[in-house]
Length: 230
Image 1 (tube, rainbow, N blue to C red):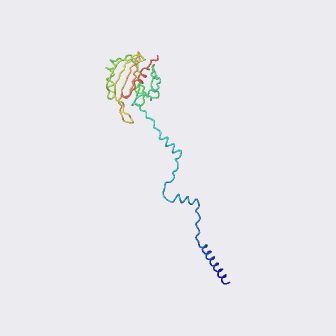
Image 2: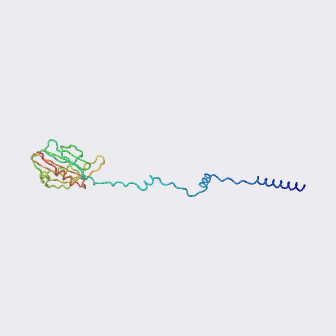
Image 3: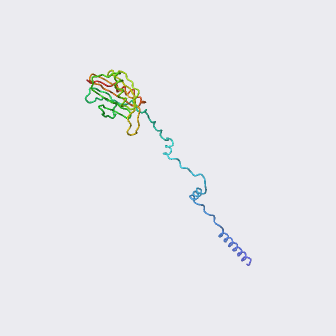
């Protein structure tokens, strides 16, 4: 009987030891939530970061690029455009008609009508006279007068030419323009003065512009257009 009690006591002690060992053993930690693992992987250390794709507007501006600026047009100083429109003009109290550029400024000075635009000028002067101009009288009598009134007058040449309105005396020369009140500059001008005559009436048509301007066609249009209307 004593032996049986001894074995039961030993078994009870062994069970207590086992139960004590199970209660003190460490518990394994639970796995971290998925979101926590992702955050840890993203911020754990330096490394290449994802790049956002370019927006459609950025791609469009990159492919199109900056627009090409339009070419700047340039005409020599004083050149009258080929597209210039001309309109008929009749001075008050006269029986003539002449075409002048449309849109040019108009003024009256010293009995003459003046049309001007930038560096170009047209002067129409009508006088009553019984004396017809000739190449000889223009050179001997009128050139000296112009020499005294036109600054730096030079290179006078006189000849008779044909125009649609009939034969005319043409005087060409050079001279300085008046001082520009805005810029203070003086332009070297070329002059063409056509003298038309009909018994009792003389018309001096003076065309002027910078010496380097190519106004052969416009000046021909104007000088060819003069007509006697009665």
